[in-house]
Length: 450
Ligand SMILES: [Zn+2]
Ligand SMILES: [Zn+2]
Image (tube, rainbow, N blue to C red; front, side, top):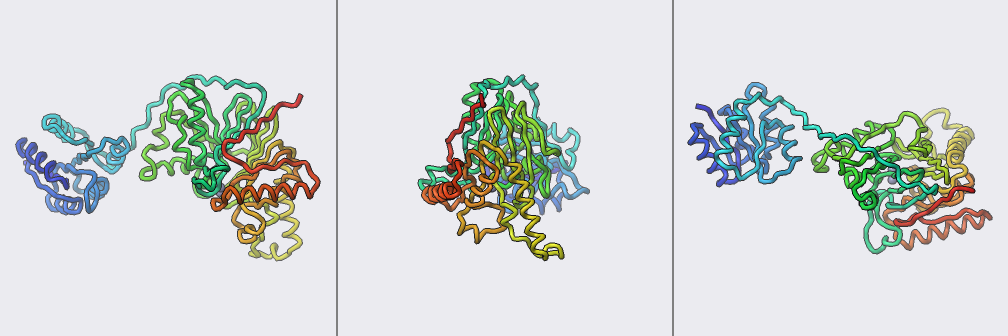
């Protein structure tokens, strides 16, 4: 006689399953929670385990994993659940289940399914998740190109979103800037601001296929956390390319997919229905359509770049997280760094490289997280102060500077004061640089020189 172990904390379900299976000739043993179930499984070596997912003292996923650790005894496992989430089914199969049933279970269908599980090939220790079905990619027509380049801010905040009345003017979403140029949609970073951008793009496309190219400076949360909420990636007709660089510990794809792994998010990167392509770059220059993209590694913890976008209507620099080398107090770890003149010259050189990278930009979007006093307490944190942003912009002969990556503790009044301070510094230098605080919803249009 074959033995079945039913593990379910719901006595009614337990009773129903018990009756159906006993009538079919099974010897039935029962447990009311995961721990008791595992103990009985060890003692009785049942041929089949029917296990609920949500149970006290070891849930169904963990029961599957623990049963599969025992290589000498491999029962068939059916997982049952009250909810019908595809992600739960995939996680149960990955944990070692042979089948997944949604309750309530009709007796006849259930017996048929049990028979099929008992006669099917044994589940391998680790099932690979079903890959998403790829539809063929429809041709994406370039957007209308009127020759202008448009920059639009969707998220301007650093570190963490800060919704609420005190930040309503500048906005509380984290880093995301849209650039439209040469018929391309280029998205600079994927902080929480990308959600609203995605909704707007989807509305604009009105069902037509579209392509968005994301440029990721680095993978700190405030630059990638909105990606799972980017609606265009959920439509099979769309193409979403993600450009960026290998991180300090993992490649770009690994970081992007791990933030969407169960238990952090219910849909995996692989399961997104759109054509999402992670394009990890090895070179510092590449192109998106006719837009020339240059990248430079910047002074910020881990691997982080700034981007330079060259379009026919103007040059945009995006440096959301950056601390000038010249301001960074070097650690005296080796003999070389004890020579202060040498250290000074070296950091000046590094700083100058950044100025050259920015040179001639029409728009510079730059980290200006702190005021001068705050910066004194944040040297070496990887962010700039207003004074640094203005000095860099002036040295590089930039036309327009947007103070960016607002500190989460700064309300609208504080940012207003910082913008006013930046304007004072420009005036004192007798320069023409236009300075603004980056603000959600603001658009800047560059027209081609005639
Ligand atoms: Zn940041
Ligand atoms: Zn960062």
